[in-house]
Image 1 (cartoon, rainbow, N blue to C red):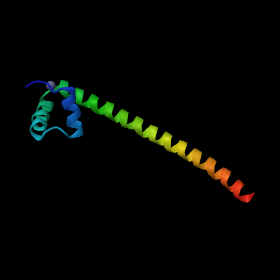
Image 2 (spheres, rainbow, N blue to C red):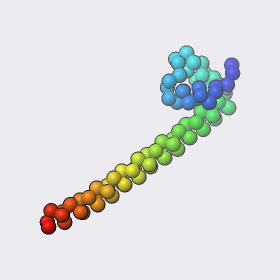
Image 3 (cartoon, helix red, strand yellow):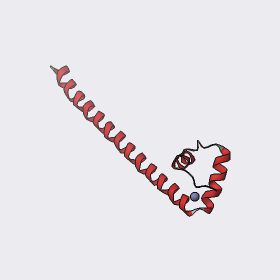
Length: 81
Ligand SMILES: [Zn+2]
């Protein structure tokens, strides 16, 4: 059996691979260290990207909080005048 392609490994992780291919691929993965390694690498890369996007989301949120606190700092002084 031929090795899994990068796309197939991605789809395997996404669980968008068709059931038959998924079945044959998982069987191949059990037998093929090479593809197992590639799947782990793809998974690690994915985890890294996820971590990165979470970090970016937090950064954006923090930015929002800063601009909110800036607004709330301005508003009370405006209303007290
Ligand atoms: Zn393989």
